[in-house]
Amino acid sequence: MCGITLLLDMAASDMTNGKPCATMPGDYVPSAEDFCEMLQRRGPDRVGEKHVCLGSSTNLRFMASLLQLRGAHPSTTPLEDEEGNVLLFNGEVFDGLHIEPGSTDSRALLTALQTSAAQSLGDDRSVITEQGTHAFSSSQPQEETDAVVNVLSNIRGPWAFIYWQAPSKTLWYGRDVVGRRSLLIHHPTVQDPRLLITSCAPLAVPVPSDASSEERAESLEGPNCATQEAVRQAYWQEVKPGVYSIKLDDSKPNEGIVMGPAKAHSLHSSMLDAIAKQCRVGSALISAPDTPEACEPAQDAAATSLLEHLSSSVATRVKCIENPTGARQEAAPVGVLFSGGVDSMILAALADRHVPAGEVIDLTNVCFAQGTSPDRKTALDGLAELRRASPSRKWRLIQVNSTLEAVDAHRDHLNNLLHPSSTYMDLNIGAALWLAAGAEGWVECSGAQCDLCHGQLQQSVVSAEP
Image (cartoon, rainbow, N blue to C red; front, side, top):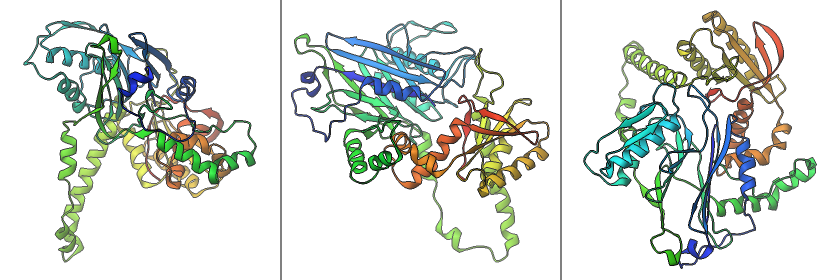
């Protein structure tokens, strides 16, 4: 998964705009190096940053790590166009945005945002893309704000973004309507007058890697743990799904750069309308047919419809994955978090329908009992069944073994990734996903134990709850 971060640093007097800021507890003020270290743990293909300076005291520092799933050639991050617009994007575009063959989601989105904004201003110009120069004519003028929101409203897929619109000096950020990509924000305070937006936040009180188990336990339990959580809760807020903009005003040179308030913009999404219309009719649960046979046609039709929708969804996801030139060819493009249960078996079988013949599908099974859990046995049985159903496919079962003690040793890092979610269920599911993403374990291939395998993080993990 990609990681995105913005650090907007201004003079304290400009940040408050003459108004007092709220205070925060503790002395938690993460540095740029803290964010760099955090980003290094995410997308493995590229890590980069871009500085935009406004006046003598305002600096926008864009930082990102890239996990590239699409594009004919290795891409870069952050992306910048010839007008100085800068885009950080963490997501996948399945529909709603035209993507040229060989291009990437981020590049297509940056071009669409620039084009749409120029059209809304009645600007008859050409936009330069990786595929060449494309001329467009201005349509009926509309609000520049609506142009940006409309582009984002049309996207289908999970996303979070940060976008600097240079001509209007406007900072945009937000998440898709379901909130499937994380994004946190720190609003300026007296103790830390920066505006920070990030995929995930550094720890409030980092635990040294060489700390003993007793020292680690002491830092993660009791008052210290409560203090950490209180500090982070006060410092960070989760960005609610939607799109937001902040205007930076430099119209009065004597006053420096003044940051306006964050404005919320409603996404024009047919998806939300469709979800709102879905409701369960109570009478249907009461007036059941007299005989089970009467239910069978409706049940069969519902099951067929569900399978068709699942198949279409899986097809859309796996077909959006490309191996850029220079990528490791032995890496499986698709991996399934695999328990051997019904959910993960169906997802694996559907992936087999749509992943090109000859490519590997990885099945990653996580066990917290050193290979003796019931899920490990069902995973091995499921692997055998998939091989019988699709013998021409190369299936690899990656058996990731861990212990609860090992997970506890990484609890501080896991809680950091999960923040602001903080329940035991969040930790249990998050630990499984974290270990599966690493995909480090023994590989069951052709019925025999193979050497230790380090899974490739460029996989698109199709996950199912066990």
